[in-house]
Length: 497
Ligand SMILES: NC(=O)C1=CN([C@@H]2O[C@H](COP(=O)(O)OP(=O)(O)OC[C@H]3O[C@@H](n4cnc5c(N)ncnc54)[C@H](OP(=O)(O)O)[C@@H]3O)[C@@H](O)[C@H]2O)[C@@H](O)CC1
Ligand SMILES: [K+]
Image (cartoon, rainbow, N blue to C red; front, side, top):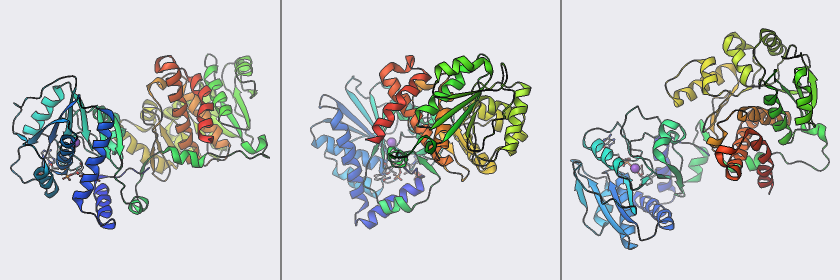
């Protein structure tokens, strides 16, 4: 699913209006009708509404919605920001159509009755916001934010930019629910913006699909459909050799569990043959925890050599690897000798962070899976998650690699400079071992001949989805990385339906 900037969203409106022979007021009516439906499916007439409107088209959406609520017999008050400027044309039309009187506000002395059943609709500013809020607008939103009603934003929380992140201490409406038109806005996908949106719901406006198809963007959200359509179907006569050979490397003394998690994850995504290269101290552990995998010893307590350079293995390296100088030497050697894409995580990334010239030796199209701190150690500090994402894009292009930046919305940056946000996953996965599982999943997919980009995209999606099921069944608190592996089966069962 594409993510558009606000200019593109406007163009999309224009194309829809033109190609469907609509008027812009008709599109506003569709927007308000679909918000009305969403709201009335969830809230009964026991709730009373305050709709706070600005002078732009976001305010027009609010006025149209308020009219529908009045016609639907809901209790509704409209508060309208007093402005020296005229309302936009469509907002004026909806102002004239509103059957009750509205209360104009030009300071923060207005009153909102505050019951448990009060719903406050924010239609002050939409994507037309062009500067930070100050003056009376800021005071009004500061006041509304203090009220403990249920808060619903139309299109975007007022004050939140759509394509950038808010600056610190900026005043922004704090919503419980955001009903956004057509597309997710990029700011919703970063924690600095997401803290204002509450739950986000896309309100479909039946926008022009030709425009959507043809308009270029370099930011996407991974959709369920993409995964469903791109999961490889297993054919009856295929044998294990057709499903790839993965080799997971890592697991120094005391951290054998990490590579065991990666190994089991690779097994659970359908890989034909899985091998593990770990120190001898992990022999019994790995043979017990992952009997399907073949063990190769590589030193006593640490990985000393990575000689198993069989060409047809797909390599995932790093979980529990340690960063002893001997291990580092073996890893450097591997980077020098290999030219097919590798999956690099954890200590493999830490080794690179201590010797950045290694970046140049990483084979093209490899997949690096750093969390924000690991990323920072390799590529430097940034001031926000969006800046970090953009730096990752730059580095992915520069080094011709994939960077999987782990976080609430894990982002995948490709060598072509495309950014994919993964929508699955939850805070229960913010625990030791989750990353090791992701390494195993991605390595397993890469081994099965998924392209490196698809291995990263599909891998992140499966990982998050299995984590979501684990959280449902076991709670975010109690779920563990092993649960993520265990629930991969349910994800595949659903995808294969
Ligand atoms: N996308 C879609 O498909 C559809 C979109 N629709 C809706 O249209 C919305 C966009 O409408 P919009 O362009 O009229 O702008 P909007 O956000 O209402 O406000 C801009 C006004 O605010 C002002 N202003 C800006 N910053 C300010 C500040 N800091 N402090 C004070 N004032 C400030 C600015 O004033 P000015 O810069 O002129 O002084 C301008 O007048 C969109 O979000 C959606 O809700 C639907 O109706 C139909 C389908
Ligand atoms: K709004």
